[in-house]
Length: 506
Image 1 (cartoon, rainbow, N blue to C red):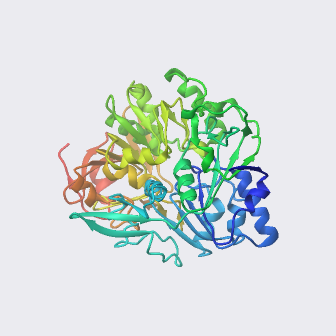
Image 2 (cartoon, rainbow, N blue to C red; image 1 turned 30 degrees about the vertical axis):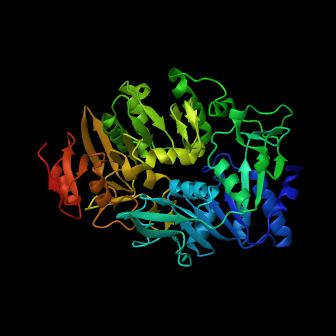
Image 3 (cartoon, rainbow, N blue to C red; image 1 turned 120 degrees about the horizontal axis):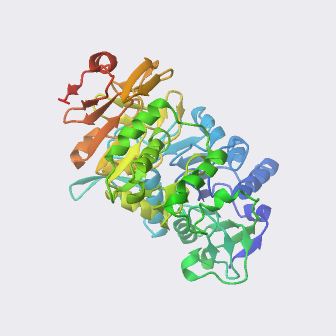
């Protein structure tokens, strides 16, 4: 039977050595006050310590002094298993200092492993991750020098097929944010942007004899409609009521509490952008890339569009009159509508459906997308892409590995080089005013996020759209298939590549 508690009382349920699953998506839907109550307890008593933190999509709030950052920084956590570390500013730095073990697994594979544990299975099989960094035959999931746990990902063969087997430690505590708890303890998510892994986490924790702790905005007397309940009260141990701070009406567009027709998507997106963008990505190169990439869209396509340069695809999809003829999706579980960006990435304006994250990755892993648009840090001669690990920095692979693993058409959107690149487009002709200092096309990528070998075996079409040309994945590697007007192929492309490529007739 659940109990109504204060945040401090609820944190007393957590013991030394617990494995905590945190339900959030990057910077949204975080139970911030529970995290800060845990920090308060650890700072005062030195307990709970030796914790393991698991999160499919990350649990920061873009502020190194809020949420979990404090207790992680002070040493309460020994191990983090996470799909993406982007919103965890302080934690990302500490990982590279070997302050604790840290592992990066594909977001969807963590979500499926949690669901497997909820069903009494020790782990989940997946083809996602084969021949990329997480594969133990490559690098494995450890990020820093002390992360040596080889139980998390194993290569296995079953019935003559190759798989990776993802296995998480037994989860003993759930920390979750919901909207309402009714008098039976049922938890609804009506004002939340996502549901994430909330139900699977709760089921896994209860099966393991642990504690489910939920922060809600309010307590209500009337019981929730059965279809509105995400977590039934019988799975909940502690409910903490924390009235939310007022927020701008733009945020309400993300909850699905009112209909937003296609004609208003842009208005709401602009209101959100002013309040949530971490940085602007709009520049001449991104515009050229987005315009060309958007030509890959067809009516009735089911689509995923990544952050950064790929986001410009939506602008040109709107100009081309196709944006309302496709279905956009986002990793957090949203289908339809218009995915938000910046600090609220994962939320959706005017979604048709928002379901559990594991279900979304069922769609992605099984080739349910027609086309995806992804960014990249570097591409090598073979067509492999590194999208998760830069020089002296990392964010994590997130849903990238799942999204690109089986999608029929994969469009990578990236500049030819960076740091100083200046480009201009006028009258349909592209001029390179200044080349960047750092090339993005390299002989070998530092770490593999996308395997060209697997893509060829799967029969996927893969193209690499830049501000000056388009490459395609061929049988042996990259193939130059398009050169934009104003660009000299020899001077601006071939002489600047550190390897030779096949050149198509165009």
